[in-house]
Image (cartoon, rainbow, N blue to C red; front, side, top):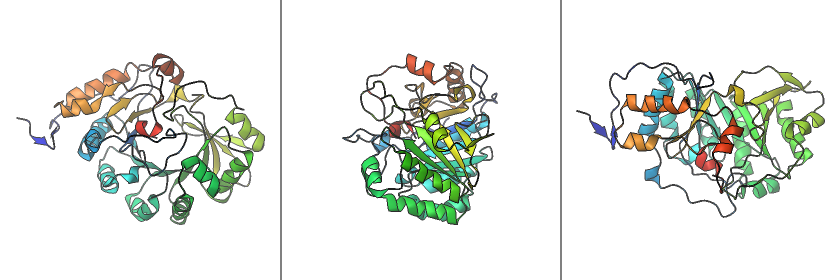
Length: 343
């Protein structure tokens, strides 16, 4: 007989041993972006529509027990890097205890978190104790008025306090800045100065079509890679991990690096090693798909570990070659919000 805990079956004690998770293009899947909530304490204009969004009812979000079960199954298939995302992860109560439990899973080799920094400062000692492998901090500008314009909230000081706390504790830090149509060269230069002064990666990200607004062609702008090369003519490529989404550059005199993430251009798809699980339990094998497997439905209908494993393997084996092909086959009139996908 199968026992139940909070409506979820206890995993089979001896699930069938499975091969490593590899897609139909020969790409091993070793990285999971796990969104634990769609709630956020900012309202960034590139992430949410002007009127905001209706957040998912709590009962429709995967429980921590369900999330942990999925991590254990996926890590048994070779997924060794887990990134906790949202929304804003620390907007969900119990985030830190959940992360501690994941850290205790032997097959999880590195645990990371992406955060907007508003509530993160008070958790930094615990993150350091946890041995967090990396913190990605979203920070699009250092100007208070501009921050309010982008995020629709006046909380830059809280984010900067988190930044300072990470530096003081020598926590592994990456700064993520989305470059918008109206981002100035001065803003880029000011942000880049953070990597001149500190041993961190300052990553500039192409804006992607996930604001929850009507889909349409983005306004034509100078390619981000051309802007960065013009602003930093001395920057030289740094060899990074083959599956890295960021192209890294060193600049003489800089303590850290400059990064370029071409998520809209999709220049890194050939080596993509990641999958995503949304807050409502939808598996995505590409940022640009509409979701390929309803894990929540399977979990809550009594699926055993073998069912879940084989279902994941089946959809990973039908992956499109890149994000452009995915988008062409997954059309929609309204773009999802990044918070609903998982940043």
